[in-house]
Length: 100
Length: 494
Image (cartoon, rainbow over all chains, first blue to last red; front, top):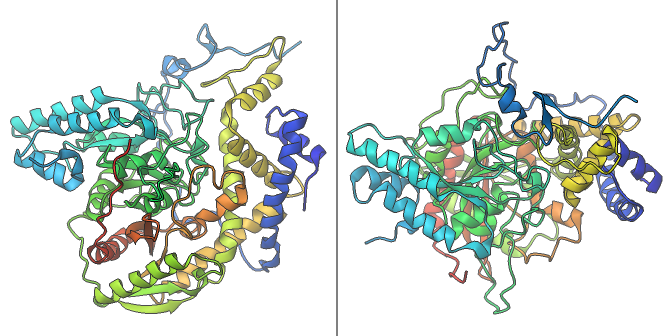
């Protein structure tokens, strides 16, 4: 499979990366080279193979169903969480207007 | 008196414990080397005061007769992919420039608890995506090694842990942390004549490590020799409830159990790794390794890993797919860069921020990942790649019915000059052709220096082991180290 400039523009938009025409043009052959190369995977018959889900078998653990079970990942950390925000205001993340 | 910066982890730890020198003297010596090596660009941020503070704490503990940790008095370099509280953490990206975590990664916490100190944050390929350390927003890292042709071509230290490999081989740090998603510890170790191990997936917590491809990312140590790696891995590893894939297993005392006598052990030689066009000097180094392991008492057996050629293309679907998902978090809202053009709405802000904040290789991988996960292509690419991953893992399972460890080259070539391969993304990816299969299978794998090529550049041999058998890997690595007699050092020019 291969991509053209329209496809790349669509992918870039899905990925929320702004790209100008020149950049899109440059990406087309680069992506096609990689996609052409990974196409060789289709020659392997995988009809009876399960896709890998966990490389080392490891059951997911449950934790106690309580608030702030772990002080590092629990609540009461508002100021820490906002400390690196580019536009924190009044204890919230600031964003441009989203509703007209 | 010995030159303290020539010492490794074990020698420093023992010397400090014996009172031969103080931890402060060690930290001062390495701080001085770091300060004098700006030309190598190995560090993004230096933290000499942190190294001294940790050293003073160790010296005080020793004076008070307290028990010292396994890394007591050892200053290290920290790859700038680990969150360090109060110290900028960038993943070598513009989008995280200025990000100062409010928390400490589990691996770095463990190291500080063991008595290590931090010399600084090490440069790397941006978001750990690269094999030559040419994708960092903060500039290329230059290897301390040079070809002896007098041209002084700046050489690649490998990637993505290129700051780590340069710092250790140039004696700016006795050891450094690395992370390995598809060879990012082993390949730079091989390029710079040092030792590095990627443990079994889950041994080291990923909590606080900037995520690239979560099903593959593993931290590990990079140091001068196998013993130093055993000590440092012991300090880094351990169960962490904050990482859902952390292994709930005791951490063995790898250092105490090191044993290079391989009698009764079988070493598998995968025939598919003898690829057409592989550098004859690499093949020669592999043959030397086979002879050394036989000399150590091992039996050598021919094995087959039939899906080897598909591992790398599968990796270049799986890793970008996971990256495109992981890197969705960089949105200009919660942390890092924000680019808000005049009059822009939220969606425009996302797109402008990410265009400004990510480098070319990162964008390329996000686009590939987005494409292979998109509706209509998911099964053909992503599901197929995950099935191939199952087959690659099964290949290893079958092989390990016939052998205890596998020996292979770490890389298909020695280091190359910066810029010599950067115009060809696919050619660059092929650097990791021998490293990626073990990553896809989550297996422990180590690179040990085994000699230099005709250009005087280091080569590495790779040992891959069964899941959880870091000991077997390190024992075989030690057997090679003892026989290779690798003593080459880069001549100081910086």
